[in-house]
Image (tube, rainbow, N blue to C red):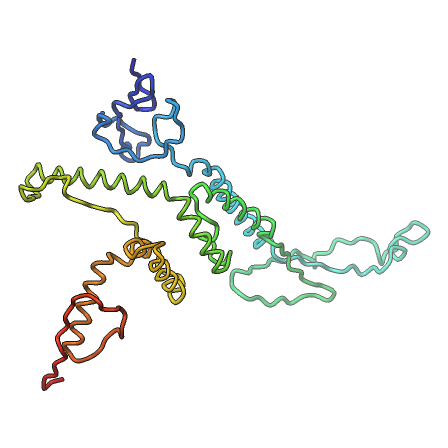
Length: 328
C-alpha cells in the first residue's frame, strides 16, 4: 500500500517512511542525480506543512506564493533601465527655422513658385554629428538654430508606486513589513509597531526553528556519548542535560524609556528579568548579576564607588572595606 510521491515513500494516509535524496549534477551539467535513500526516522524535518491532506508530502516555503511578484519587479526594473538608456542615447534635438515667414511668399496667388523660394538641394546643410562621450560639449550653432534636450520622467512616479505595492505584497509572504525594506517609509512609532507585529506573526515559525535545533542538539549529544567524545557523571543521563536555544533578541529602541517600562513590568509581576534579558539579547540575567557584583567588589577593593547604587543590596553579600595602598 505504499507509493513514491515526489521522492517520498508514503502510505495511504500520507505518512512518510523513506526519502530519496538527490544532489546537483557537477558543472557544467544541470539538474539532479540520485544519491541515496534515508529512513524518515533518521531525519529531522523542517518545513511548512499547511495542508493536512495526504497530497502534501514535502514542506513548501511561504515565499513560493510571491516568487512571481518578485520576478515581475525584477523584469520591470530591467525594462526601466533599458528605457532610461534609450532616453540617454537620444538626448538632443536640433531645430532650424525656415527663411520663409508665410505661405504666400512661397506659393504666390498665381500658383507659380518664384525662383527665390523654389526648393533647392544644398550641400551646405548636413546632419550634425554629435559625440557626448568626451564630457561637456560646446555647440557652435548657426543663426536661427537651437538645441533641445529630450527628457522624460523615468522612472515615473506611477511605476515607483506600483513597484512599492508589489513589493509590499511579496514581503508579506515572509511576514516582513515594508518598513524593513525601506527605513524611511515610516516613523519611530510605525517602525516599532511593525516590529512587534512581526515578532507576533513569526512566533510559531520561530518555535519550529527552536524545536528543530533542540532535537539536533540532543542528537549530537547522544552521538558524542556513544563515541566516548563526551563523558558525563554516572549519576546523570541524557535527560539530565538541559539545553535551550535563545533567539538573539532586539535591543532597546529608546533605553531611557523602555528600561523604565521593563522595570515596572517586573515590579507588577507582568514580566520577569529572565524573559526580558532574552528578548533584549543581553545574555543570561544570572551571569549579568554575577559579573556586576564582581565588578562592584573589584571597584571597592580599589577604593572607588562604581555604578552608583544600581541595586538594593538587601542580601548577604559582604564587600570588604576599601583599602588604599601606597600606589593608590
